[in-house]
Length: 226
Image (tube, rainbow, N blue to C red; front, side, top):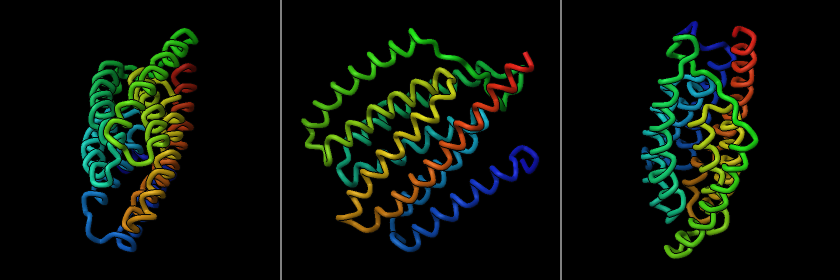
């Protein structure tokens, strides 16, 4: 494993983990579920940045833990999204990544390209999912309805692109991170312990940006070697 990750990746993961632990010690110290979920999530991202299916396996566990955290603040949109969409899509993505290794390298998935027609289809599906979830979340009196609905939108796009093995999935997750940072800042106004969740998604944002850069490198390398 020492040779598997670059010094940059080790530094990124280490700094993210330290930041998460420090924020937990400063603002929470009670909800260990948040700490565990954050560390599982950031570990998932560093593996996913390398196209390793293990990252998707960890995402399944993160989705379960994060759904439980969201339920605690009545963020039903987050709970429904991660338990009902992100977690199942992570399972499908895990299967897809395992079935499509790059040249029999099980630790690296083959990068896929999504065409214009499929992107148009994705836009249509996203609009339908967004509208459906808006009314579902409104029915359950979800806290901060509009940003919660936007989180569903970005999560759906990210989950779909992850399943399709497109580098764009990392950018979609980065957009989702921005929405989640806003959501949990709002929650932190009522309970300061949620600052640790804000810090978690700040770390996720940095990792997702790196993930996009890493996948672009993978795409270039795989194209040149084919």
